[in-house]
Every structure is written in C-alpha cells, then in structure tokens.
Image 1 (tube, each protein chain N blue to C red):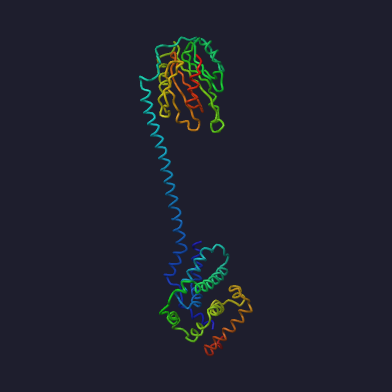
Image 2: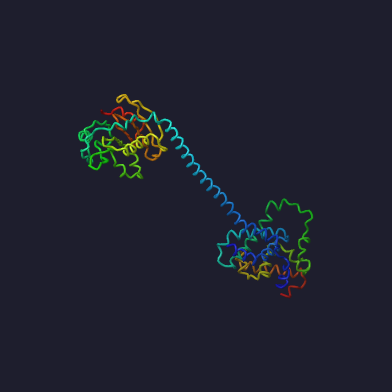
Length: 160
Length: 257
C-alpha cells in the first residue's frame, strides 16, 4: 500500500498544491492543506478502485480543506502584519500580470472553477459532480467568470 | 487561455521539505507505530517468561526446604521403630487372591492386622507378594485399593472423590538381605521426600505410638494426606485422597485391633 500511495502522491501532488494555492493565494497555507489532503488519502486509499476516482476525491477534499482553513480559529487569530498578497504571489512574477491580477481578484470559489476547467481540463458535468453543483449552474458561472476575467485582461478573452 | 493557465502554475511545485513532512505523517508513521505496538508486546512476553521461571524456581526452593525440614524431623533416631531383624512368622503357603477381605487375609496369613475404616472398600483389591524359589511368600505388600490407577484424573469428578488406601508392608521369616534393604528404603522414603510436607506427629492412644502425618505437596489437583507408623513390626502407610488431616486422625482413632 505504501508503494501505491507514493505513486499516487507523485502523480497528483503538484496539482493539489496548485489547486490549494489558487484558492488561498498563499503558498504556506497551500502546503498545509496539501499535507492534510494526502494524510487523509493515505488513510482511505484502500477504498478506491481507480486513479480518476482518487483525483476527484482529492480535489473535493482540497476544496473543503480550503474552506475549513479560512474558517478555522487559528487563521482568524493570526495577525498577518506584513502579509501582502503580492509577497505570496512571487511565484507568478514572471507571468502574465494581466492574468494574475485578474485571476486573484476573483472570489476563491470562482478561482476553483477556473482552475478545474482550464487547468485540470474537467468538463462542466465533472466539475458539477466534484463540487456538488448543478451542471447548468457550473456552465453559467464559468461564462460569467470568463467574461469578468476578459474585462480585466483587456481583450485576452478573444484568444479562447 | 488554457495554455496561459498551464504556464501560470508551472513553478508551483511541492518542495522536498513538504514531501518529507507528508511521508513522515503517512508511510513512515505507520512503520513507527508497528514498533510502538510490537516493542511493548515483546516486553510483556519477556516479563511473563521471567515470571514463569520465577514461579518454578520458587517451587523448587520450597520443595528443597521442605525436604531439609523432613530430613531433620525424620532423622535416624526418630524414624520408625522397625526391627528388620525380627521377621514375622506367617503362613507363607497361603495363596493370596484379589478381592480378599481383611478377615480372609488374617486367617490365611495367620497374623493379626490393624483394620481401618475405608470410605469405599471393605476388601483388599490387590495383593503384592514376593515369592521365593519354592513359591513361599517372602515379602508381603498389601494395597487396599489400586483402582485409582484406572481413575481419569483429568476429570474433576474423579478428583473430588474421597477414598482411603492402606499399604501394609511386612517381611516374613524368609525375607533376604536384599529385601531388607528395599524395605528400609520404602519405610524411610515415606517420611522424607522432596515433595512431601510434614504436618504433625499425632500420638495415637489406642496403639500407644506416635504417628507422622504428612501432606503430599505434588498432589495439587488431588490433595493427599497420609500417615505412617510401625505397629507389631508391620509398616503401615495410610493414604487419604481428599482427606484432611483431621479426618485422617479420626480414622486412626477408630482403628480396630
């Protein structure tokens, strides 16, 4: 089982970290969440029959962990004196500033939708099952978000 | 847009430190926990073994001490007043049979024997005789009830039984020097053994002699109390199974001459 876990972990670790990061915008918090997710996966690994199942489960747990993290008493207690969003986004310094600015202006839940659709490549129905939403709701929201992004990015939307 | 997103997160990767943290909390944690479970189990097993050895050593030492005590009690001067030079004159042509009554035995051998109240038997079940080359009785060893060897001691109902066995040992006028030696060993061993515990010396008024009452310490599951004495140059060994010391004394007091 250890070998199987190592294989799955190496396959999905970066995706989960990126998903957590897209929600939290903070790499340290994203790493904490990633650790939680994989510890839970390790305890439940024998319940799954396919890699796809595992991936979807990890995404669901990551989204829940992200939400719980922000609701936790620890997060509320911490006084982040020098924390600025720009410092945590230094990973993305070399990248498209328009996209970066536009993306991180979105609400966390909307960022997740964008991540799952554009980065993970999931279809509307798959996203709906992961996030327990209506398929048509996912489609509507994504349209709205992309329009909003495009507005922010000044014409990049046309590349889609 | 998709390509932009792919490139967007390209540098966000799990660090080696995070890898280590996660492994320590998953696969390595599981291995450690095995150790945490296994080590106490091994320690407990070792403790049990030492405990077992300790109990055995304790019993061995106790038995040795009892043996020393018995040796002091049953020294040469305090041992049975048994004169091996005075052999008994009995009817050595008597043919002993199984299931012989006390009266038949006395009549056949032409000798007087003490009679004890027996819980379950009125007769002698077995007769051990040592014969000489002329088929005369050389030495007689009588047992009141040898059926106990057929009892299933693994059954609790067997071990709850109460019965008396009377061993009578005496030599006839035809006993040899070798018989004397063997007889001496029997009479000595009955009083001094690493597995027997001396209880008390009881003065039996009826016979005007002292009787040594001993507990057989090996019979943990079938307690045995026995007593030994010599009367009219005959060695008696009365063994009571599930018989207490007081019950045995009661039996001795009711002996028939």
